[in-house]
Image (cartoon, rainbow, N blue to C red; front, side, top):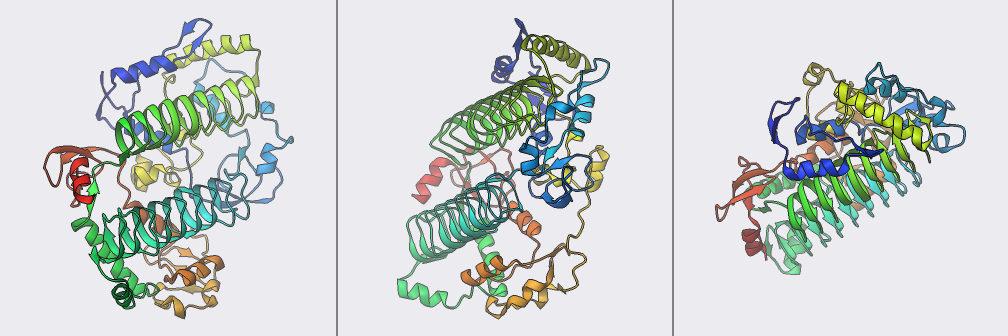
Length: 561
């Protein structure tokens, strides 16, 4: 079935496999099947819509609407939502059923749900079981961490995001697992005491490596395996290597910048890039897919089976159109962050649950429709409790009503998101300027300068070039970002890290540093292009106009191993 996306106008295909899945997740209530219709948006626009519900990295100071105490939250004070602290929200002083209401069949469902969202208190951010890590979000089990996001089981990690797991003493990293003493590293596993590593595993005491495994004491190398004492892929003796490395001072801002620029050129002209990162998997199509089977059009998945159009999936089975759902997820459709949940449709951040439809922020609940903020509830509609028989009869009527309004089968509209478009991860993957966003009728939030009232401000050129010349006085000043003019400060543990690792003080705001890392993250899109070596047609997340050497699997393995 071929359709035209009602948002972007592009054509897209609904396959027979897609239709089978819609049939599988269509609810059967009182013996009647309520078919989920084929989507009206293409896969990219459906994903974009879900992404607008995740404000991952923007944190604000605001007051609790329960106690008035100060909070660090991903909801700014001007948001028209009630926000509670962790103990307040989970405590007995808040009962979400107090906000229950009858369904009005004279009005659209989404209109009624939007009103409920603004009444029921929301959790200030998602950060359970963490210690001294107030400035973190979508995290758990972290200690002494600052401005990390989508991360777990870390200690002394700063300014890092996008799946940071079991790391210690790291800064400015993205997608890292079991790393220690790392700086500006991406897609790494089991690496130690290194900086500027991309797609590396088992490496240590190195700088500027790409697609290297088991390398020690290497500098500006690519596609290397189990090497020691190499510079730009040239082998040296141990004494020669360390003698040459004495000429490079990683703690000097100017020298480090030049080495970084040289490395970027090597990545574009010398390094070999895999067309797609699919490992130990069967019948899979997408990028960054590991240990999986029957995965289609998916990006970053591990231990998954029979999933399609999913982003950042871990341990999912029989799911379609999900984002950030992980651990024992099954039969989910159009969901975001519904961890350890099954039989979920059109839900946002609802976890440890089963059989929820059009629900938001519901935990340990089952068989609910159009609810928000529930804890250990069942058979609820718009936060009102019913008997099983009443629930099923009313749910049938509501679905029929939504079919008439054109709402049934659609995820929550972007306008219902509690966040402005540019606050969310949608801006990372589908960037738009203020005018483009406003033209679509979506909301935009102007970013204020959080430190604008700081008296001591420092121009980046006033920072000593060598970290050895930087003293604790820098902690008293706000640095003006070299690119955006936004102010940012260096925290004491961060300065300690730079000195220990012999790295210069950054000249860019943490948000700008994050944006620059995203440049090395390929779009979540697949193109058809030719292998740079054998010229055979291949599929890749590198677009055909990219300058890098992109090899098919056979040529890559033949060249690197």
